[in-house]
Every structure is written in structure tokens, then in C-alpha cells.
Length: 196
Image (tube, rainbow, N blue to C red; front, side):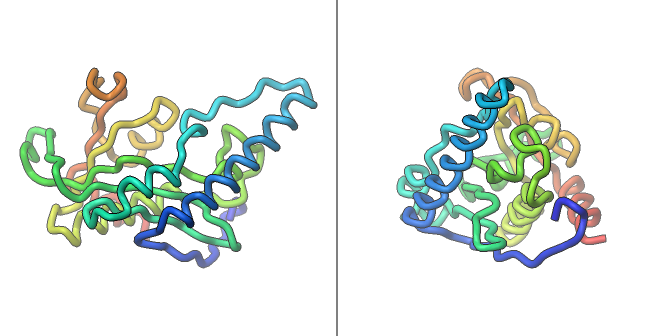
């Protein structure tokens, strides 16, 4: 919870397109409400870099692939976060991890009512951390030793840097987004922090 107390949540390790479409509807409705409130109060409308993502389409395109699970965190009857992974075809670029397989985070998003950029008081905090922990666990389960890679939206760069990801520069083939990797050592440190 935003006050620091813990609540139980359900982690879905694979969702269907119907589930994702329902999430799209709920999240877009909330965004529209927040935008209307900002206009009514004469405030600038907050820009959300992943606000245009269509999770229903993303899940539909990848649901038949075992190597592309979409994870969801559900709490208080609503989906609090979503993440789409790829467990094959991506390899480390860090000096000590060059060419070794990793889990690639294709998309990761927290529900709009949990984003400080959008609401003054988020309902839940730590959703992104739980999803990262799940991605690390999937990397360990696949014997990738916790290695993770991703391209970050600018608004999320600080989040990944704070949690041990190393920036390997701008990738012109991915809309000039910065590419980040988490090493096995950083993954172990992340797990130690999140379980202490």
C-alpha cells in the first residue's frame, strides 16, 4: 500500500487477450478521468509515455508463443501492473555476459492509478519491483542466472538505474531508446534487497 503496509496480491504468469483487453478498458477510462480532472482544474495534462500501449493487441500477438509470457499483478479486484517477456533470442552485451542468454522485458507498465506522475497518492507502490522480481525469477528458472535486458522509456530510466541495471547506450534500431542490462550479481543483490 502507499502507506508502506503490505497486502496480498495474485501474480498471473500468463494472461489471455480477453484479460488484457479488459485491462486496456480500465486503464484508459482512468486516464481519461485524470485528463478531464486536469483540464477542469487548469493543470497541464500529464504525459504518460506508455499511455498509448494496447495490451490486448500485444498479448494477442504473442499468446501462442511459449517464449513470450505476459505477467499480471492483481490486487483489490484490479490489475495493478503488466509485463511482457521474451525468454529466447536475446543475449547479454555486458562485458562479462557477452553472448549469454537473458530474459528480455519487452513491455512493463504499472496501472495509471499507481503512477506518481499521474496521481498525487498512488493506491499501491512497489508494483514494478514485484514484476522485476518475477522477471529475475524467470531468468533463474531458465538457467540464465538472473540476466535481464530491456529498452527503457525515458520516464523509466531512473527506475532501472536505481535497481542495478547498467545502461549500454542509445540504440538507434529501437527508436533511440537506451538499452539496459541486469547482471547476475546485480540480480542477486536485487533479490537480497527485496526479500530482506
